[in-house]
Amino acid sequence: MHNSVRLLISVAVGGVLALAQHKDVAFDPQYKIPIAPQGLANRPLPKLPAVYDTAEGMKIRVSAVTRELVFPFGFTFLPDGSILVTQRDATLRIIRNGKLDSAPVAGGPKGFGTGESGMPGAVHGYMDVVLHPQFAENKLVYLTYTKVLDDKKQVAALARSKWDGKQLTETKDIFVSEGQGPARIAFDRNNNIYMTLSGNDPQSPNTHGGKVLRLRDDGSIPKDNPFVGQAGKKPEIFTLGHRNSLGLALRPGTTDEMWQNENGPNGGDEINILKPGANYGWPLVSLGRDYPGPWHSDRPTHAGFEPPVVYWMPAIALSGMTFYTGDKLAKWKGDLFVGGLRTGEIPGTGHLERILFNQNMEELRRESLLVDLHQRIRDVRQGPDGLLYVITDQKEGALLKIEAAE
Image 1 (cartoon, rainbow, N blue to C red):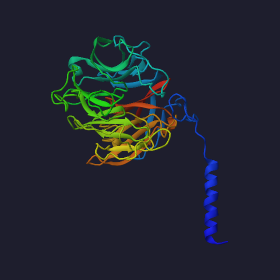
Image 2 (cartoon, helix red, strand yellow; image 1 turned 30 degrees about the horizontal axis):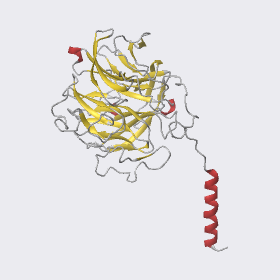
Image 3 (cartoon, one colour; image 1 turned 60 degrees about the horizontal axis):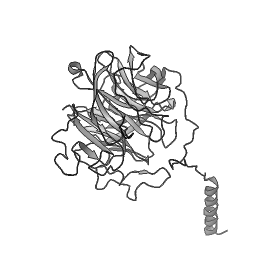
Image 4 (tube, rainbow, N blue to C red; image 1 turned 90 degrees about the vertical axis):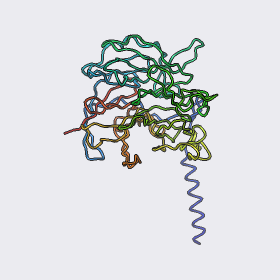
C-alpha cells in the first residue's frame, strides 16, 4: 500500500476515534453553563494535622484551628490573637484562644445571607473584614456586606464599627455602592481603603460595577482620585474594566502599590497592579475562554489595556490573596499566596497557590499547595505569629494553620 494511502486511512480512523470519544456536555438550563462533574466534590476535610513536602524543600504541617465555620469569606487578627471571621450567612464570628465562640459577634450591620457555596450569584452576606491601620488607638473595624435597599435591590456596602473587646458598636454605613459583591477591601499606608465590586458596565466610568473604588477611612473621596472633577465619571472610582475581584493585597515595602486579582470565565484569571484610572479590559478582552468553550474575545490579548502580571489558563477561581513577609516559613518569604476555589471548572479541586517573583516582580515559578484537601480556599492571611492561615469555603468550613514541620 502506498504511503500516502496509509496516511489518509490513518487520518480518517483518527477522526472517527476522536468523534467516538467525544462526550456530550450537559448544560445548566438556568445559567447556560456546562454542568460540572461531581467526582471530587463535597469531600470532607481529611484528618489533620498532616505533613506535606513542598517544592522549595521545606516540609509544612497543616492543622485545623476550627472546623465549625459556615461558608466563611474573610478574616482578620485582633491584637490579642483573637480572629474575626465573616460568614456568608451574614454573621461575624470570633475565635478566641483557638476556640470558636458559640454565638456570633453582636452589633454588626443587618445584611442579606447567601445560599450554597459555589453557585452563580452566591457571594452575598458578610464578605471582607479589616482593621484600621491605627486600630490600637481608634478600635475601628471595617466590614463589607450585602445590603438590601428599599426597592429590594441588593448592593455591596461598607460599614464601619468600633470594637469594645466583645462586640461591634457604633456601626454605620460609610459607603453604599451601586455594585455587588464580592467586595474585598484593603488599606494602603495613607489610610485609603480600596473596595472591589462586580456588576454590569465595567467599562463605564459612571457606574460602580466592575470597578475598584478608593475611599478615605470615613467613606469620603480622596482629592487625588483619578476621576475627581470629571463630568460623567464617578469620583470614587480608582480603576475600571474588572470582572469579579476577590483578592487585594498591598505590596510590602510600598505606600500604595495595591495588587488585585479577579476571576476570568473558563480561564483568564489574573493578578493586576492597580494604577490610577487604568482600564483592565473586561469584557472587551480576556485571556480566557467562555464557559461553553470558545475564546471570550476574538483578540485574547490586553493590547490597549493594562495587562496582568500573572494569569491562569485554565482558571483556578482566584480568591483571597496575601504577601508573606514572616520568618517562620523562611523559604517562602516575599512570595505571593492566593486561594483557588476550583481548577478547570471541576469542583473539589480548590487549593492554595504560591507565586515566586524576581526583584522586578516578574513571575519565576508557582506551586500548588493543599491540593490533597479538595477544599475551596476562600482566603489566606499571615498571622501575627508569622504563620500562614487559610479558610475553606465549605458548609463545614475550617480555619487552617500552616507552619514549618521540623
